[in-house]
Image 1 (cartoon, rainbow, N blue to C red):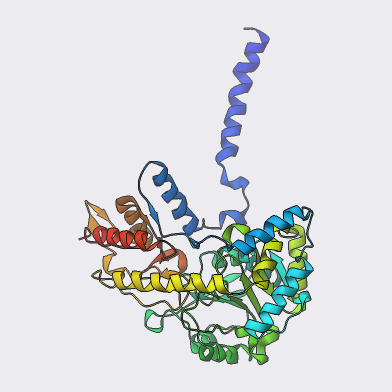
Image 2 (cartoon, one colour; image 1 turned 30 degrees about the vertical axis):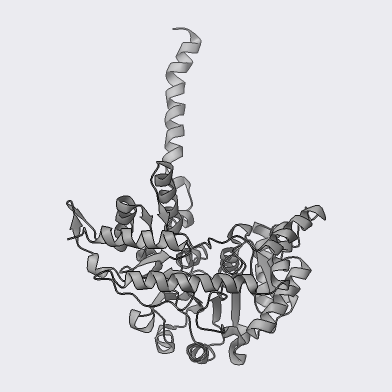
Length: 422
């Protein structure tokens, strides 16, 4: 055998074997990565797109995304920013005019007394929350999370090497955790409390009275940081929004998270922010400077226009969501076995589907809400998200950020699908 043949015979298979092993061996990945779960909402959205690509008429009610266009004056500001040459790196915490516009908004609408130095603009509110957790949580420290919770909260705590302590609100209390429940959960290891209002996935909104009671508990523990996710602030069906950070006794313990994705239909623009005590704001600036640096310059200029304009667009969208809420909740309540509350904000319904768990169809047993969501998707091509990922294994999340026509058809399909389970 020629020399080249010997080399091919003895060497090439070994190289191929090594390559295949490296391509599939999770030991090459960090323990930090292997501990993370895939985002259930993104996984369902991916599956829905695959089915749509196969020619099925899929109605997607799984993604948390407005179906409206970004307001025209915001898009015009982005075009102008391009023409004006805003094509260079932006300051890590955001352009000064955007940080001032955010500070002004927080003062006027939320009674939060921040200057630009308290504001850090990030590539979405998701990054804002991750920055805060990475800045304050040490390995083994506890973060109390109100459940049901947004899917990424627990995974972010894992990245920070902290431990999530889940405190669950009941359906009877619109899924809201009480101050008494919070007080029982606090330990010497508690570093932070994390929750959203209006809430993803339930649409629940904490009242001023409820938040003041929670504030009274927090005020007893000066080393605890509250991370208040207020990204759905403008989608509130009950009137004015109350920010827990406006309570004087705990104002220096609260980080307020917000952004432009939901209220201004700017999900793809990726602009979120925090208003925080200077120490935490500076820490997030430091973290962000090593990870992404400043947010997209064009998107920031668009965000300035959003906050310097009026609230016409957010209010019109909120009106549409309210109409859709009433439509969807009314139809869901007609489905036997579902337990449905009325969400006070955001654009989700979160029905209890426990009556259908443990049932079967064609020999297939549905044991979990995640399995039920997948069954609905494969059977009638409507994507929802199982509540397991939100810390509520008896529920599914249904987004009503879709047209009335699609919502009516989707709920009718779900009703038909559930009727097959015996």
